[in-house]
Image 1 (cartoon, rainbow, N blue to C red):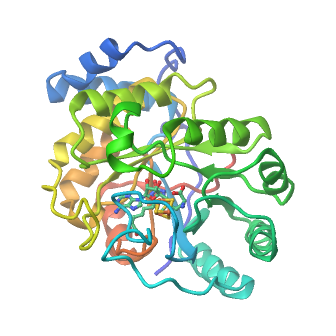
Image 2: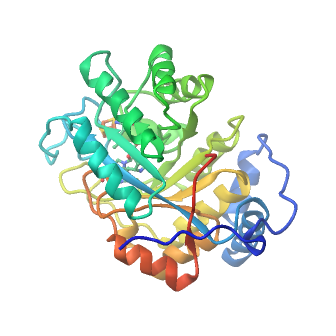
Length: 338
Ligand code: SAM
Ligand code: DTB
Ligand code: SF4
């Protein structure tokens, strides 16, 4: 079932003067926001959201894993790492035609952004990267916003992605600098920051966020938000994931997150980064509709749309169409910026 797209009316335009965009947030300020009584926090976030973002619009972004499994990194949350007992079987890389078919289907169902993921530690020059560049050109031609997540990049690779028409690059910080080494040992937080800087330098939009539910403290969560909110410019897109606990990964047995913590993270992200698109990302299959709507109310304005994320499930398209319709929300018509 596809969406009928409706243009934005005056009533749906931003409601008040947007707050000044700051890049000098202190950790203490961020922690103070995180600790506010929930309704006070949501009130503030909602006011920023209404003043800075078109009201009632949610961007639908479809994900596709173009190269699954067999990754050299040891990210504790990830089923595609070859370090874990429960890793997924590595699969052959998809061909351009398969990807364009999936992108066409996503567009027909109302997605405006298409994100291609590869289980790589870093991009290596060669036919596989050349194929990704072809995929980007093809998806772009379909009129979709293009996003990729391929691991670490060199300057030259970033420039080639830009030349192929890539709009955004996803590269998550995942957690705080301090908690990072308890989750991943095969790369550093600064490696991550270096790739983000390369992406920014060539003019590709930056998509970076993290995961909650990996045994981190509230200070770690605020520390991650601090890293994001002190980037200048802010990332255009900030995905907030709840850990998908996957059997056979080191983090599989951690307790589930409290959905209200996700609301808090999204609300604080919205206050800190008024102009960014905040994405309610992985973990929605375990999240009641009401909690999802509270996240959208508190400042999220994008979801992953389609019944698969990379290797795990996501709500069915029909359920998301219904969710938005029941709340009187609309899918974003076109996605010029972030
Ligand atoms: N290999 C590339 C990289 O790590 O940047 C791209 C693919 S990787 C799977 C993209 C992101 O998915 C990770 O940075 C992480 O934030 C997220 N992710 C992976 N497994 C997850 C899980 N089990 N739960 C939530 N998010 C997850
Ligand atoms: C992001 O922040 N979350 C997406 C996307 N960016 C690439 C990935 C979620 C992956 C969830 C686990 C899986 O399906 O393998
Ligand atoms: Fe590899 Fe990315 Fe998974 Fe880490 S998150 S193991 S880099 S695919």
